Amino acid sequence: MLNRDGTELSTRGRTGQRSSVRWTQDGKYILTFRWTPGEEDDLIAMPVSADGEIGAPRVVASKLATLLQGRFDVARSTGRVVVGSGAVFSDIWSFDLRGAAVQAKRLTQGTNWHGAPIITSDGGTVFYLKSDPNGNSLYKVTAAGESALTAERQMVNNHLRFSLDQRVIAFESIVDSAFVLVIHDLSAGTSRRV
Image 1 (spheres, rainbow, N blue to C red):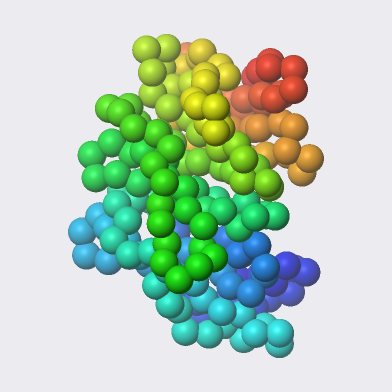
Image 2: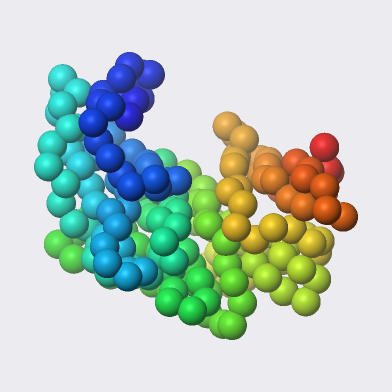
């Protein structure tokens, strides 16, 4: 695990092959999922001291059905968390870690698969890949509702990545049995394959 400045914090912390490890918005905790028996996992927070020591984990949200993936994201300025969770079909949930109890809000619901979500810095928009009649398209959800941004065949379980300015989303996809990098410009509403 690395500190925000790139220095090494620990090589001992074992997260159980989790693909998502995130800092909290205030930089005081590292978040990840801890495996539990079955497919319901615990989101844990590990405190990090000023001198870089990692403390004992505490459970933030328990028994989330993450389908053994544990993929989530944290809004940089608000600390809002989004996670794909569900026992049969993976929906997108959002919650705030501030306060005594975590109260999750379901952002999507249906019989479609939803890929791992990413969230804007302000916590106002969530993006994810979702299975639909076209294949697996890039979607966004805001307070106004859900909308499709692309209508192409994508791989639903691949990670989405923002550019530093959050104007572009990039992700790996499969097109005609070949792996390609899809770059979607949010302001222009266009995608290109590399």
